[in-house]
Image 1: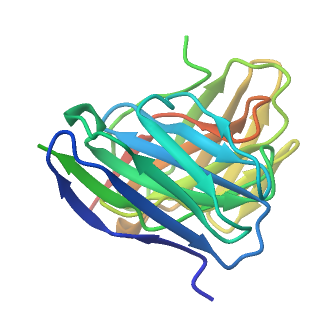
Image 2: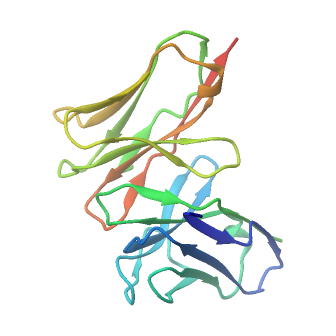
Image 3: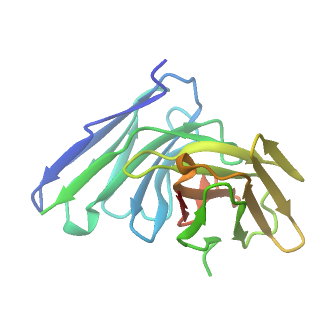
Length: 112
Length: 109
């Protein structure tokens, strides 16, 4: 039982490049989330998906797009990376906004 | 004001000490609260849930004070292995948890 799996674990991008962060869960969670974590800022919600086929913006959605491909997978895309998007990105799964979330191992992204 | 706030610390305590952290929340309608532990360069891991008055698990006790809108985490008999950052998460009416910035604990020998 892998839980929540993110790929890649590390990535360096040049400004303007695009990439997709992948996330898959095998915990049968209805909801999935993307957070970013920056020093002193805590975890900030980028996008979430309450169920397959639905996505909604979180606190910091600008510069990102998401896709809930099926119940298991929720990807995060950076269309044109900027240095301000240098961060650690965590995907999580859960059963809804008032229940606990379970996190993947994170993706450390550096944009130069 | 942030929706969920924590003292960043660090809290430096000797082994065996009792230490407590608080987490304040601004939405009086919040119903569910969670404490997570995060080790350096790792993902947050669920430590405890706090749905009503409180929760206890071994050396760890979480309490909810609705009147003053904060939750607390008490760690008794601190171990070196308790050194980590403790994140507070709260249901703030959105469909995802809102987190504080975390409190760093350093247990010293």
